[in-house]
Length: 126
Image 1 (tube, rainbow, N blue to C red):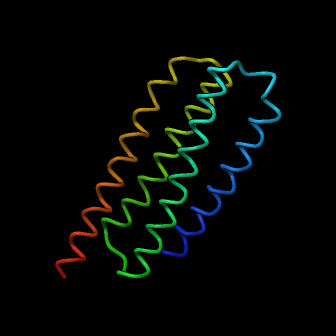
Image 2: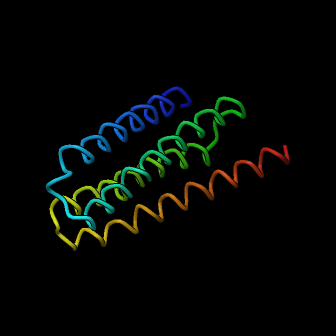
């Protein structure tokens, strides 16, 4: 689990840099200021949670795999897809209904962070 999610986190971090550079250069003249801010929010949250995915992999390596860490990793991945992905598509396409998907990704992020807390508390008691 730890190597797999560390690799996924690293790839998602790499993609955040590439997607951010694409937005800063190729989309600079295409997107208005509001759409650019939405796009950049997607990039920022993708990078934060790619790093969080690597953190989960490190914790799993140190403490051992657990269901809570496994689900945290999955939820970070789902959150990136739903949250950042919907913001990318929304900013480029202008289809506002996609904004309804974004909070689902946010909920996935929150749930993943809660699972890390649960894992930390369980580990301290052991």
